[in-house]
Amino acid sequence: MAFMDKIVINGGNRLTGKIDISGAKNAALAIVPAAILTKEICRIENLPDISDVSIMLKILNTLGAHVRMINRNTVEIDARNVQFYTVPYEQTKHLRASYYFIGALLGRFGKAHVAMPGGCNFGGVRPIDQHVKGFESLGAKVSIEENAIVNAEADTLFGSAIYLDTVSVGATINIMLAAVRAKGLTVIENAAKEPHIVDLANFLNSMGADVRGAGTDVIKIHGVEEMHGCSYSIIPDQIEAGTYMVAAAAAGGDVLINNVIPKHMESITAKLIECGIEVEEFDDSILIKSDHRPTRCNIKTMPHPGFPTDMQPQMAVLLSIAEGTSIINESVWDSRFRYVEQLAHMGACIKVDGKIAVIEGVEHLKGAPVKADDLRAGAAMIIAGLVASGTTEVENVVYIDRGYEDIVGKLAGVGADIRRVRITDPESRIQIS
Image 1 (tube, rainbow, N blue to C red):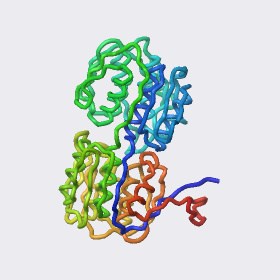
Image 2: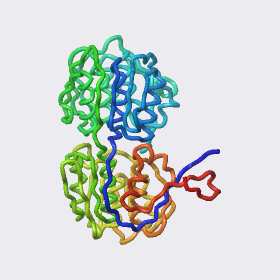
Image 3: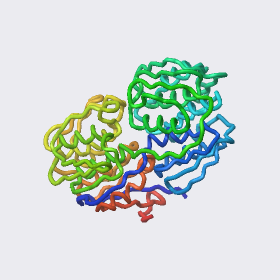
Image 4: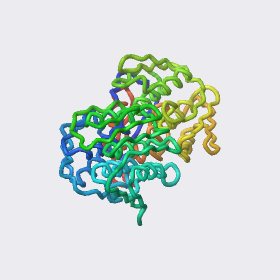
Protein backbone atom coordinates (compact mmCIF):
# COMPACT_ATOMS: atom_id res chain seq x y z
CA MET A 1 0.00 0.00 0.00
CA ALA A 2 1.36 3.43 -0.93
CA PHE A 3 1.80 5.99 1.81
CA MET A 4 2.07 9.73 1.58
CA ASP A 5 2.53 12.39 4.21
CA LYS A 6 1.12 15.82 4.92
CA ILE A 7 2.28 18.52 7.27
CA VAL A 8 -0.60 20.00 9.27
CA ILE A 9 -0.22 23.42 10.90
CA ASN A 10 -2.55 25.32 13.18
CA GLY A 11 -1.35 28.88 12.73
CA GLY A 12 -1.12 31.86 15.02
CA ASN A 13 1.44 30.70 17.59
CA ARG A 14 4.37 32.96 18.42
CA LEU A 15 7.75 31.25 18.19
CA THR A 16 10.13 31.31 21.15
CA GLY A 17 13.32 29.39 21.81
CA LYS A 18 16.32 28.05 19.91
CA ILE A 19 16.74 26.25 16.58
CA ASP A 20 19.96 24.42 15.72
CA ILE A 21 20.91 24.56 12.04
CA SER A 22 22.06 21.40 10.25
CA GLY A 23 24.90 20.97 7.78
CA ALA A 24 24.61 22.64 4.40
CA LYS A 25 22.66 20.62 1.83
CA ASN A 26 24.41 22.16 -1.17
CA ALA A 27 27.87 21.64 0.33
CA ALA A 28 27.10 18.03 1.24
CA LEU A 29 25.87 17.22 -2.26
CA ALA A 30 29.22 18.32 -3.69
CA ILE A 31 31.43 16.86 -0.95
CA VAL A 32 29.91 13.34 -0.91
CA PRO A 33 30.80 12.53 -4.56
CA ALA A 34 34.21 14.18 -4.07
CA ALA A 35 35.11 11.27 -1.78
CA ILE A 36 35.51 9.17 -4.96
CA LEU A 37 38.69 11.11 -5.75
CA THR A 38 40.73 9.18 -3.15
CA LYS A 39 41.26 5.50 -2.38
CA GLU A 40 41.46 6.30 1.33
CA ILE A 41 38.68 6.82 3.88
CA CYS A 42 36.90 10.17 4.19
CA ARG A 43 34.99 10.92 7.37
CA ILE A 44 32.33 13.59 6.83
CA GLU A 45 30.67 15.19 9.85
CA ASN A 46 27.71 17.57 10.21
CA LEU A 47 26.06 15.83 7.27
CA PRO A 48 22.38 16.84 7.01
CA ASP A 49 19.94 13.95 7.46
CA ILE A 50 17.88 14.66 4.33
CA SER A 51 16.67 12.57 1.43
CA ASP A 52 18.98 14.19 -1.16
CA VAL A 53 22.06 13.17 0.82
CA SER A 54 20.65 9.67 1.29
CA ILE A 55 20.29 9.30 -2.49
CA MET A 56 23.88 10.48 -3.07
CA LEU A 57 25.17 7.92 -0.56
CA LYS A 58 23.16 5.17 -2.26
CA ILE A 59 24.73 6.12 -5.60
CA LEU A 60 28.18 5.88 -4.01
CA ASN A 61 27.30 2.46 -2.64
CA THR A 62 26.11 1.29 -6.06
CA LEU A 63 29.40 2.41 -7.60
CA GLY A 64 31.27 0.14 -5.19
CA ALA A 65 32.13 2.44 -2.30
CA HIS A 66 31.73 1.23 1.28
CA VAL A 67 29.50 3.70 3.10
CA ARG A 68 29.30 3.43 6.89
CA MET A 69 26.99 5.67 8.90
CA ILE A 70 28.58 6.44 12.26
CA ASN A 71 25.47 8.31 13.36
CA ARG A 72 22.70 10.21 11.55
CA ASN A 73 25.06 13.12 10.78
CA THR A 74 28.45 11.39 10.34
CA VAL A 75 29.54 9.04 7.57
CA GLU A 76 32.73 7.25 6.59
CA ILE A 77 33.24 6.69 2.86
CA ASP A 78 35.80 4.19 1.58
CA ALA A 79 35.96 4.48 -2.22
CA ARG A 80 39.03 2.29 -2.82
CA ASN A 81 36.93 -0.47 -4.44
CA VAL A 82 34.94 1.81 -6.74
CA GLN A 83 35.28 0.34 -10.21
CA PHE A 84 32.09 1.41 -11.94
CA TYR A 85 31.67 4.77 -13.62
CA THR A 86 28.03 4.46 -14.73
CA VAL A 87 25.14 6.08 -12.85
CA PRO A 88 21.73 5.18 -14.36
CA TYR A 89 18.68 7.43 -14.61
CA GLU A 90 16.85 5.47 -11.90
CA GLN A 91 19.37 6.92 -9.45
CA THR A 92 19.86 10.39 -10.93
CA LYS A 93 16.22 11.26 -11.62
CA HIS A 94 15.48 12.48 -8.11
CA LEU A 95 18.06 15.22 -7.75
CA ARG A 96 20.02 17.63 -9.90
CA ALA A 97 23.23 17.32 -7.88
CA SER A 98 23.73 13.76 -9.13
CA TYR A 99 25.56 15.33 -12.06
CA TYR A 100 28.51 16.00 -9.73
CA PHE A 101 29.38 12.36 -10.24
CA ILE A 102 30.43 13.30 -13.78
CA GLY A 103 33.24 15.53 -12.51
CA ALA A 104 34.23 13.18 -9.68
CA LEU A 105 34.33 10.04 -11.86
CA LEU A 106 36.13 11.91 -14.63
CA GLY A 107 38.74 13.05 -12.11
CA ARG A 108 39.21 9.54 -10.67
CA PHE A 109 38.93 7.33 -13.78
CA GLY A 110 38.95 9.61 -16.80
CA LYS A 111 35.50 8.17 -17.57
CA ALA A 112 31.93 9.02 -16.57
CA HIS A 113 28.62 7.67 -17.85
CA VAL A 114 25.89 9.53 -15.95
CA ALA A 115 22.23 10.04 -16.81
CA MET A 116 20.88 13.59 -16.88
CA PRO A 117 19.57 14.54 -13.44
CA GLY A 118 16.18 15.48 -12.02
CA GLY A 119 15.34 17.53 -8.92
CA CYS A 120 13.12 20.60 -8.68
CA ASN A 121 11.71 21.77 -12.00
CA PHE A 122 11.95 25.52 -12.59
CA GLY A 123 10.92 25.48 -16.22
CA GLY A 124 12.48 22.97 -18.61
CA VAL A 125 15.69 20.96 -18.31
CA ARG A 126 18.48 22.72 -16.48
CA PRO A 127 21.25 23.21 -19.04
CA ILE A 128 24.68 21.68 -18.50
CA ASP A 129 26.39 23.44 -21.40
CA GLN A 130 28.87 25.18 -19.10
CA HIS A 131 29.73 21.85 -17.45
CA VAL A 132 30.41 20.35 -20.88
CA LYS A 133 32.48 23.36 -21.89
CA GLY A 134 34.63 22.89 -18.79
CA PHE A 135 35.13 19.15 -19.28
CA GLU A 136 36.05 19.64 -22.93
CA SER A 137 38.53 22.37 -22.00
CA LEU A 138 40.21 19.82 -19.71
CA GLY A 139 40.58 17.45 -22.66
CA ALA A 140 37.55 15.21 -22.27
CA LYS A 141 35.32 14.11 -25.12
CA VAL A 142 31.71 14.66 -24.08
CA SER A 143 28.58 13.40 -25.79
CA ILE A 144 24.90 13.28 -24.87
CA GLU A 145 23.68 9.82 -25.76
CA GLU A 146 20.25 8.23 -26.07
CA ASN A 147 18.00 8.68 -23.02
CA ALA A 148 19.96 11.82 -22.04
CA ILE A 149 23.04 10.02 -20.76
CA VAL A 150 26.18 12.15 -20.50
CA ASN A 151 29.28 10.25 -21.61
CA ALA A 152 32.64 11.86 -20.82
CA GLU A 153 36.04 10.28 -21.46
CA ALA A 154 39.66 11.42 -21.41
CA ASP A 155 42.92 9.50 -21.62
CA THR A 156 44.47 12.32 -19.61
CA LEU A 157 42.97 15.51 -18.18
CA PHE A 158 45.05 18.66 -18.68
CA GLY A 159 44.67 21.96 -16.85
CA SER A 160 43.19 24.79 -18.87
CA ALA A 161 41.81 28.33 -18.71
CA ILE A 162 38.01 28.14 -18.55
CA TYR A 163 35.72 31.15 -18.72
CA LEU A 164 32.11 30.45 -17.72
CA ASP A 165 29.66 32.33 -19.93
CA THR A 166 27.24 32.56 -17.02
CA VAL A 167 27.85 32.27 -13.29
CA SER A 168 26.99 28.62 -12.60
CA VAL A 169 27.32 26.97 -9.21
CA GLY A 170 26.92 23.49 -10.72
CA ALA A 171 29.48 24.02 -13.47
CA THR A 172 31.99 25.57 -11.05
CA ILE A 173 31.71 22.55 -8.73
CA ASN A 174 31.84 19.96 -11.50
CA ILE A 175 34.92 21.52 -13.10
CA MET A 176 36.64 21.70 -9.70
CA LEU A 177 35.99 17.99 -9.11
CA ALA A 178 37.60 17.03 -12.41
CA ALA A 179 40.41 19.59 -12.39
CA VAL A 180 41.93 18.61 -9.02
CA ARG A 181 43.32 15.46 -10.68
CA ALA A 182 44.24 17.06 -14.04
CA LYS A 183 47.83 17.70 -15.04
CA GLY A 184 48.88 21.33 -14.67
CA LEU A 185 46.99 24.51 -13.80
CA THR A 186 43.28 25.09 -14.29
CA VAL A 187 41.87 28.61 -14.00
CA ILE A 188 38.09 29.02 -13.72
CA GLU A 189 37.01 32.59 -14.47
CA ASN A 190 33.56 34.01 -13.71
CA ALA A 191 33.27 31.25 -11.10
CA ALA A 192 30.40 31.06 -8.62
CA LYS A 193 31.22 32.36 -5.13
CA GLU A 194 28.64 30.66 -2.90
CA PRO A 195 29.67 29.45 0.59
CA HIS A 196 29.38 25.81 -0.50
CA ILE A 197 31.94 26.43 -3.26
CA VAL A 198 34.37 27.49 -0.54
CA ASP A 199 33.42 24.50 1.60
CA LEU A 200 34.07 22.08 -1.27
CA ALA A 201 37.45 23.72 -1.92
CA ASN A 202 38.36 23.34 1.76
CA PHE A 203 37.34 19.68 1.67
CA LEU A 204 39.37 19.03 -1.48
CA ASN A 205 42.38 20.78 0.03
CA SER A 206 41.99 18.61 3.15
CA MET A 207 42.36 15.65 0.75
CA GLY A 208 45.61 17.03 -0.64
CA ALA A 209 44.29 19.12 -3.55
CA ASP A 210 45.62 22.60 -4.35
CA VAL A 211 42.60 24.86 -4.85
CA ARG A 212 42.96 28.62 -4.39
CA GLY A 213 40.62 31.55 -4.80
CA ALA A 214 37.33 29.84 -3.91
CA GLY A 215 34.87 32.53 -2.86
CA THR A 216 36.16 34.87 -5.57
CA ASP A 217 35.32 34.86 -9.26
CA VAL A 218 38.70 33.35 -10.21
CA ILE A 219 39.58 29.87 -8.91
CA LYS A 220 43.03 28.39 -9.57
CA ILE A 221 43.61 24.66 -9.29
CA HIS A 222 47.00 22.97 -9.50
CA GLY A 223 46.26 19.34 -10.30
CA VAL A 224 47.72 16.58 -8.12
CA GLU A 225 48.39 12.94 -8.94
CA GLU A 226 47.05 11.44 -5.71
CA MET A 227 44.65 12.53 -2.99
CA HIS A 228 44.27 11.11 0.51
CA GLY A 229 41.53 10.61 3.05
CA CYS A 230 40.53 13.20 5.62
CA SER A 231 38.07 14.11 8.34
CA TYR A 232 35.90 17.11 7.59
CA SER A 233 32.89 18.93 9.06
CA ILE A 234 30.41 20.58 6.69
CA ILE A 235 29.43 24.23 7.16
CA PRO A 236 25.96 25.19 8.48
CA ASP A 237 23.16 25.52 5.93
CA GLN A 238 22.67 29.14 4.87
CA ILE A 239 19.22 28.53 3.37
CA GLU A 240 17.90 26.49 6.29
CA ALA A 241 19.03 29.27 8.63
CA GLY A 242 17.41 31.90 6.44
CA THR A 243 14.17 29.91 6.31
CA TYR A 244 13.88 29.85 10.10
CA MET A 245 14.87 33.52 10.34
CA VAL A 246 12.00 34.41 8.02
CA ALA A 247 9.64 32.04 9.86
CA ALA A 248 10.39 33.80 13.16
CA ALA A 249 10.01 37.21 11.53
CA ALA A 250 6.67 36.29 9.95
CA ALA A 251 5.09 34.40 12.84
CA GLY A 252 6.46 36.77 15.48
CA GLY A 253 8.42 35.87 18.55
CA ASP A 254 11.96 35.62 19.87
CA VAL A 255 14.07 32.88 18.25
CA LEU A 256 17.80 32.20 18.44
CA ILE A 257 19.06 30.59 15.23
CA ASN A 258 22.08 28.60 16.42
CA ASN A 259 25.08 27.09 14.55
CA VAL A 260 25.24 29.64 11.73
CA ILE A 261 27.93 31.72 10.05
CA PRO A 262 26.50 35.27 10.22
CA LYS A 263 28.70 36.41 7.33
CA HIS A 264 26.85 33.98 5.05
CA MET A 265 23.51 35.46 6.11
CA GLU A 266 24.22 39.12 5.34
CA SER A 267 21.93 39.54 2.30
CA ILE A 268 19.02 37.90 4.15
CA THR A 269 19.70 39.80 7.37
CA ALA A 270 19.77 43.11 5.49
CA LYS A 271 16.31 42.51 3.98
CA LEU A 272 14.79 41.47 7.31
CA ILE A 273 16.13 44.64 8.93
CA GLU A 274 14.70 46.63 6.02
CA CYS A 275 11.33 45.04 6.84
CA GLY A 276 11.59 46.32 10.42
CA ILE A 277 12.60 43.02 12.02
CA GLU A 278 15.06 43.15 14.91
CA VAL A 279 18.17 41.09 14.12
CA GLU A 280 21.07 40.61 16.54
CA GLU A 281 24.24 38.77 15.48
CA PHE A 282 26.57 36.74 17.70
CA ASP A 283 29.66 34.67 16.87
CA ASP A 284 27.76 31.61 15.65
CA SER A 285 24.10 32.53 16.12
CA ILE A 286 21.50 35.11 15.11
CA LEU A 287 18.60 36.33 17.26
CA ILE A 288 15.33 37.26 15.52
CA LYS A 289 12.77 39.37 17.39
CA SER A 290 9.45 40.34 15.85
CA ASP A 291 6.39 41.77 17.57
CA HIS A 292 4.71 43.82 14.84
CA ARG A 293 3.67 43.63 11.22
CA PRO A 294 6.65 43.82 8.84
CA THR A 295 7.08 46.68 6.38
CA ARG A 296 7.50 46.36 2.61
CA CYS A 297 10.78 45.93 0.75
CA ASN A 298 11.97 45.09 -2.77
CA ILE A 299 14.14 42.10 -3.60
CA LYS A 300 16.18 41.04 -6.61
CA THR A 301 17.67 37.56 -6.49
CA MET A 302 21.31 37.40 -7.52
CA PRO A 303 24.27 34.99 -7.34
CA HIS A 304 26.17 35.15 -4.06
CA PRO A 305 26.76 37.53 -2.32
CA GLY A 306 23.39 38.80 -3.57
CA PHE A 307 20.01 37.70 -2.23
CA PRO A 308 19.73 33.93 -2.86
CA THR A 309 17.02 32.62 -5.17
CA ASP A 310 16.52 29.74 -2.73
CA MET A 311 15.17 32.27 -0.18
CA GLN A 312 12.80 34.01 -2.58
CA PRO A 313 9.60 31.98 -1.89
CA GLN A 314 10.04 32.17 1.90
CA MET A 315 10.56 35.94 1.74
CA ALA A 316 7.47 36.29 -0.45
CA VAL A 317 5.38 34.94 2.44
CA LEU A 318 6.75 37.59 4.80
CA LEU A 319 6.07 40.31 2.23
CA SER A 320 2.55 39.00 1.64
CA ILE A 321 1.62 40.12 5.17
CA ALA A 322 3.78 43.27 5.16
CA GLU A 323 2.47 46.83 5.10
CA GLY A 324 2.60 48.27 1.61
CA THR A 325 3.58 46.98 -1.83
CA SER A 326 6.74 44.93 -2.43
CA ILE A 327 8.38 43.83 -5.67
CA ILE A 328 10.41 40.66 -6.20
CA ASN A 329 12.61 40.39 -9.30
CA GLU A 330 13.67 36.75 -9.91
CA SER A 331 16.80 36.97 -12.04
CA VAL A 332 18.09 33.40 -11.60
CA TRP A 333 15.39 30.82 -12.45
CA ASP A 334 12.41 30.87 -14.78
CA SER A 335 9.07 29.65 -13.42
CA ARG A 336 10.06 30.04 -9.77
CA PHE A 337 6.79 31.83 -8.99
CA ARG A 338 4.64 28.72 -9.38
CA TYR A 339 4.05 28.71 -5.62
CA VAL A 340 2.11 31.99 -5.91
CA GLU A 341 -1.04 30.07 -6.84
CA GLN A 342 -0.81 28.21 -3.52
CA LEU A 343 -0.37 31.44 -1.52
CA ALA A 344 -3.39 32.90 -3.34
CA HIS A 345 -5.48 30.06 -1.86
CA MET A 346 -4.48 31.46 1.53
CA GLY A 347 -5.49 35.03 0.72
CA ALA A 348 -2.20 36.51 -0.49
CA CYS A 349 -2.43 39.23 -3.14
CA ILE A 350 0.40 38.64 -5.62
CA LYS A 351 0.53 39.43 -9.34
CA VAL A 352 3.24 37.86 -11.49
CA ASP A 353 4.47 39.17 -14.82
CA GLY A 354 7.33 37.06 -16.13
CA LYS A 355 10.17 37.31 -13.62
CA ILE A 356 8.52 40.09 -11.59
CA ALA A 357 6.08 39.60 -8.73
CA VAL A 358 4.17 42.52 -7.20
CA ILE A 359 2.97 41.78 -3.68
CA GLU A 360 0.22 43.82 -2.03
CA GLY A 361 0.51 43.09 1.67
CA VAL A 362 -2.59 41.86 3.46
CA GLU A 363 -3.20 41.84 7.21
CA HIS A 364 -3.91 38.14 7.49
CA LEU A 365 -3.53 34.84 5.64
CA LYS A 366 -6.05 32.06 6.16
CA GLY A 367 -5.36 28.35 6.42
CA ALA A 368 -6.02 26.19 3.37
CA PRO A 369 -4.97 22.91 1.73
CA VAL A 370 -1.81 23.66 -0.31
CA LYS A 371 1.05 21.75 -1.86
CA ALA A 372 4.81 22.06 -2.19
CA ASP A 373 5.68 22.72 -5.84
CA ASP A 374 9.40 22.37 -5.07
CA LEU A 375 11.76 22.30 -2.09
CA ARG A 376 11.81 26.01 -1.20
CA ALA A 377 8.17 26.53 -2.16
CA GLY A 378 7.38 23.81 0.37
CA ALA A 379 9.23 25.71 3.08
CA ALA A 380 7.29 28.82 2.10
CA MET A 381 3.98 26.96 2.50
CA ILE A 382 5.00 25.93 6.01
CA ILE A 383 5.83 29.55 6.92
CA ALA A 384 2.49 30.62 5.48
CA GLY A 385 0.79 28.01 7.64
CA LEU A 386 2.53 29.35 10.74
CA VAL A 387 1.18 32.87 10.20
CA ALA A 388 -2.28 31.96 8.86
CA SER A 389 -5.44 31.75 10.91
CA GLY A 390 -6.93 28.27 11.03
CA THR A 391 -5.45 25.03 9.72
CA THR A 392 -3.10 24.59 6.78
CA GLU A 393 -2.32 21.19 5.25
CA VAL A 394 0.79 20.98 3.07
CA GLU A 395 1.03 18.10 0.59
CA ASN A 396 3.99 16.89 -1.51
CA VAL A 397 6.22 16.96 1.57
CA VAL A 398 8.68 14.69 -0.26
CA TYR A 399 10.06 17.92 -1.73
CA ILE A 400 10.59 19.40 1.75
CA ASP A 401 12.38 16.25 2.92
CA ARG A 402 14.97 16.84 0.19
CA GLY A 403 16.49 19.80 2.02
CA TYR A 404 15.26 20.20 5.60
CA GLU A 405 16.26 17.92 8.44
CA ASP A 406 13.34 17.45 10.87
CA ILE A 407 11.63 20.73 10.00
CA VAL A 408 8.53 19.68 11.94
CA GLY A 409 10.48 18.86 15.09
CA LYS A 410 12.52 22.05 14.94
CA LEU A 411 9.48 24.29 14.56
CA ALA A 412 7.48 22.39 17.19
CA GLY A 413 10.43 22.92 19.52
CA VAL A 414 9.93 26.69 19.41
CA GLY A 415 6.17 26.58 19.92
CA ALA A 416 4.62 25.96 16.51
CA ASP A 417 1.48 23.80 16.40
CA ILE A 418 2.73 21.55 13.62
CA ARG A 419 2.70 17.82 13.03
CA ARG A 420 3.36 15.34 10.27
CA VAL A 421 0.57 12.95 9.41
CA ARG A 422 0.54 9.83 7.25
CA ILE A 423 -2.22 9.05 4.80
CA THR A 424 -2.69 5.49 3.59
CA ASP A 425 -5.09 6.53 0.85
CA PRO A 426 -6.29 9.96 -0.35
CA GLU A 427 -9.88 9.02 0.52
CA SER A 428 -9.08 7.60 3.94
CA ARG A 429 -8.91 9.47 7.17
CA ILE A 430 -5.65 11.01 8.34
CA GLN A 431 -3.56 8.94 10.72
CA ILE A 432 -0.88 10.54 12.87
CA SER A 433 2.47 8.91 12.16
